[in-house]
Length: 374
Image (tube, rainbow, N blue to C red; front, side, top):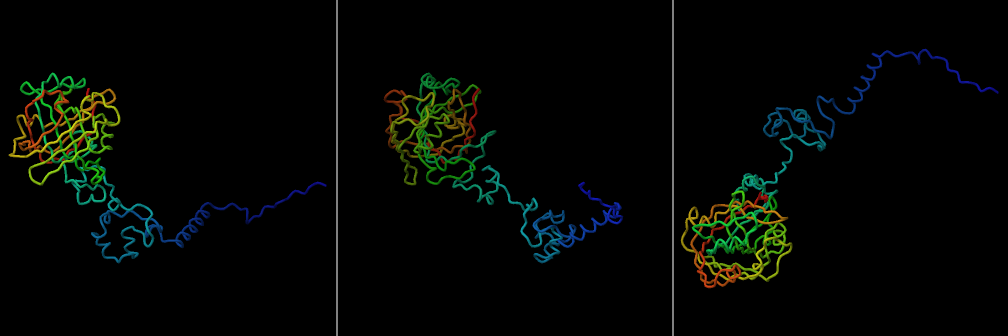
């Protein structure tokens, strides 16, 4: 039996084409009525859960706007005038002027705004000097109870200790080797704060004065000792020959300081090129007394102390570490006690003359990112 096919007759009322103007007006009326039944029009208030950016008259804080301050809190009038939400918490960030401030990671900028930086950077050190020119600060510290002990040395002897690219500096036919004991305090990596007592420890270094191929003057360290093993490991990884040491620096609050350093003879981790072979161990016991003020801006005192670069060797290259601190305030010093084997380890003759002694006031130092020497 043949299957009957459904037949549909045209319905004049149902199938008649609709006028475009009639359809659009119906949709417009329906959408308008639906929108008005759900929330007020966009001109008077925004959708709940959102916030409109204020107009130019309300872009400042609401306390300074007459329209905002006159209306009661939470009222519809204030919501319309300031473009804020009426009852719900905002999900969209507010105007730029009231957004949460994002602190920049620069200790220098936080020093200027010290009253507003308590949540970002907190340090026990008072404000220090600016960063070295053209460099990003990688470590900041304070040097306290610092004494310079200097012996004159034959420049030819010192040149044998230096890596390629450095030349010994000479003043009046001689150069000098320095032994510098002090306390390194509040060591930190900006913008991080200090780690309390862990960031303060004694240090001892032996140094000579050099010039690189670029003409920059600085300090080459023959040996350094620090009483923090983590600090020793980090600096040796950067090519600076630190060694662990047992040390104590004490004073009675007057002008007398006692230094006691005993290097256990163990090298730190990470081999460092051009290390002095005899300076991985040694000892120093000294009592220093400070006297009258010395002019540190000229003469031999300035030549020995005003140095703004340190050097290290790593990965087959020579690196320069820019440093900046306040000008030295020096006093002449004398030795009540001196017992050390460091001059002998450096090859100085027995019976060498007593060293030249300078005692320095505390300074705040900042080291910048090292740069390779050409």
